Every structure is written in structure tokens, then in C-alpha cells.
Length: 473
Image 1 (cartoon, rainbow, N blue to C red):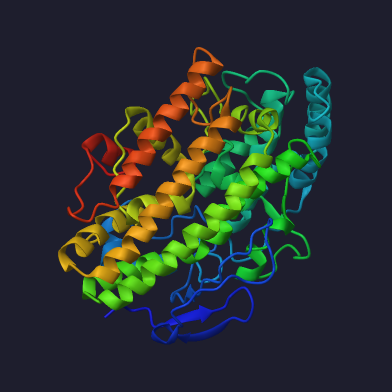
Image 2 (cartoon, helix red, strand yellow; image 1 turned 90 degrees about the vertical axis):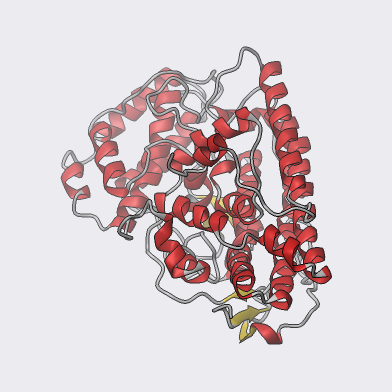
């Protein structure tokens, strides 16, 4: 039988641990609105095990081998990477202190003025005033503190290179003034991060919550308060559109937190042929996707396209030796859904974009999501072979709302993305860029819709698509 036995009922109102089998069949919306939406109250599967205290720390031997997670089983493996209440988000509110964080906060106000020469002059002067022995001190930092230090360093690195948020995307390599130039590489190496702006840094590490002090333990109610989320560091301080851009991405992980436990519980139900339990788990998954869909549908239209390009597009380090990207392909919510439902990418551009983006995803995450994809039986195969009507209905309700989510992203995202990509690629024109995005997203919508056909078992993806999700060739 599946290992999961307990869940936190009503985590947004009155969390209490109850056996999963005693959860009521009806999921109701809560009274308080978030971003204008009344979210559904989704219970949280209680995870066992001790989660590591840094996202990128490589604490598992053979971290690139998904077989280690297979031996653990889905829920036990998940407990090493995520938490019951926050999913893949941090368990404690980020707490940014020290001279580098202070410099980053000050730099955003100067950067937003749009004068690259004066900004770099100011930046260089402030950098030289920092303690020159910072590099030696970094070598003594525990992994979580080094990871936190990477966040302002990455923002500073971007602002120094770009100079002016209103300018065209900077190209080629860049190096910050000393001692910051010599600090970035050692910290990145110690943490295991590519030192470029990306979606994991932006969404999962660089947030603050009004009313929650840095370092405080987070509840699901805390992380789901999307209206109270603020970026820890700004590129245009106080800008409403920048805030709503951050909130739109953050909402995916905040309201996506219950997905991971219920998805893994569904896999363990499949292994045990527990059809009633699997149908229950999939109904929970459907409710999670619906919450994310409804909230992001409200937030995405608020994002100003010009502001989006100033942040997301200029952060894609074109012509640099590692070509930074900041795309939703990196977020665990999307990685989990694609793996759980066997979305097999067919468009060469989507395959290439995912491969480029996954360079920034922690190795243990990639191994975990490969394990989810490779779990036997696959959910679609299990539903197909079971012939169970309620199970099939619950499964199709998930793939239907997932397809709707991607259709919404194609339509609304296409309006925001006109004139710039976040996938680190160069296009001849803004029109060609937009056309490519719409073409790729149309194919991805079709790939997602295909997962709802339970008349056929799940089939493995192509070798290029498998390679793009980190499967060794």
C-alpha cells in the first residue's frame, strides 16, 4: 500500500493532521480571496524524512543517478527535496544580510535611472569599498549561507553587465569590479550554481513576505499569501509591473506546493493498484492545477510587456560562455506535471529550449523528476490497463486543466513576450521571436492534450526529448 497515511486538512484555514482515508470527498474554496480569486482548500500530504537545507547542495551520493530515488520510492525521495507545507520553496523565509546584500539593494535605485556610465562609475566605487578579504570568508560559509549570498551576487552581476535596464540586451561576457569579480566564481562553485540570473533564483530564492521576518519558519498559509510577496531585490524598485511579474511566477510554486505530495501518492497508489486512492490523489492534483490556473490567469495580463523585457529578456546572457536564461521550464511545478503525465515534447525548438534551461536546475531535482517519469506503471498506463471509470475521469480532469493552463499561457504569454525571449536564443526580429514562441507553445499544448488519451498506454519520448530532460545518452 502507499506509504502516505496522513494529510494536513484545510491548510489555508485550520490545518490538522488526519488520515488520508478520512479526508472528505468535497474540496471547497476558502472565503478569503488571493489576487481576486477564491482558491480551493487542498490538503497537504505529510512528508517524512529530513529535507536538506539548501536547494543546490549535493548531499546525496551519486546525485545524478535517478535509481537512488527509485530505491527510496516517490514519497520518501520527495521528502529529501521538498517539505509538506512549502513544496520546493524554502521552509524558512529568506534572510538577506551583509555588505553584498546591502550593496544590491542600493544598486537597484541607481540602475533604474537608466544611465549606464554613471551607474557603473557608482558601482565600481562602492565595490572597492567592500572588504577585500571577502573571498577567504566565503570559503568558511555553510552551504545555505553561500546559496543566499549567490542571490544578490547574481543580481549585481546582471546590473553591472546591463548598465541600463532600458538598453538593448547586452552581449558577451562581463566581470564585476573587484572584489566582487573574484567572489562570484568561488561562491558559485561552492554552491553548485551557474552564476547567472534564472527562474529558480528569481522565484524560489529571492522573495520576501510582508509580515514575515527573515528566517521565520513558513506555513502553507504564509507562502500562499501571494498578495504579500515582494522581491527581495529589485531591478526597478517599487515598479508595479515588476512586482506582478514576480508574483505571477511565485504563485505557481506557492499554490503548486500540494502537487508534489499528491502526485507521488498517486504513483504509489498505481504501484499498489489502489484505484480509489489513486482517483482521490488525482482529484487533488486537478484542484492544485486549477488554483494555479485561476490565479496566474489574473496576474499575467497585469504584466507590462516593456517591463517584462527589461527584466526577463535582458537577464538572458546572450553571447556569454554559459548563456543565462530565466524561463518557466526551470520551475519544479512544470517539471513535475510533465514527468507525472508523460508529456513527450515533439517540437525541436521546445526540446532545445528545455535542454538549455535545465542546465540551471539542481542535479538532484533532475534525478527526482526522471524517477517520476520512469515510475512503473506510468499513471497513463495504469489508468489504461485498469479500465476503472472513476480513475480515468480523475486522470482526464488533470490533463484537461493542464492543457487549458498551457493554452492560457500561450495566449497571454504571447502578448507579454512580443519582442523578447527568455530562452537565451537570438532571433532576426521581434516578429520572428513571437512567431517561434507561438509555434512552440501550440506544439506543447498538443503534446499536453495527447496525455489525456487513456485508450493507449504511455509511450517513451524520443531520444532527443529524453536527453533534453536530463536522461544520459
